Image 1: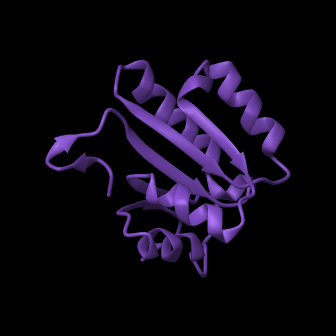
Image 2: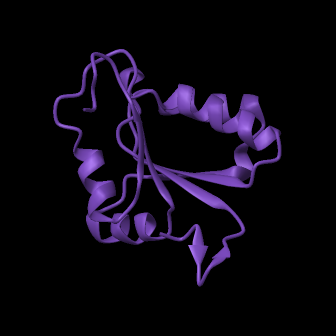
Image 3: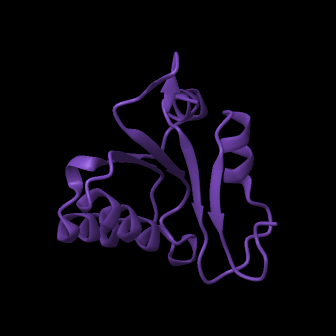
Length: 127
């Protein structure tokens, strides 16, 4: 985890999202919450890895909230590059919204990278 290296706080806390840009993944909720934190002066950065049908909406939201410099959209990354991006992150985000996720594969990716996870969901998911 990068947040503290050698006992010294990192300049920014990096939050990573990996997944599709679909409504039920909750990415707009996550981006709005992160934008509020950034606007309040919290030193966070988002790395958003993936793509999908709602990508234009996500880009428009980031632009409307004027937080583009704090957010990186990588698009799809092959596993060899995904591993490196997650290694440069501090927390894995799983902002499910509006649908129960059955597998939660992104949670396993985050845990395999040694990241703590912040997750949400409906019906007790993720457990």
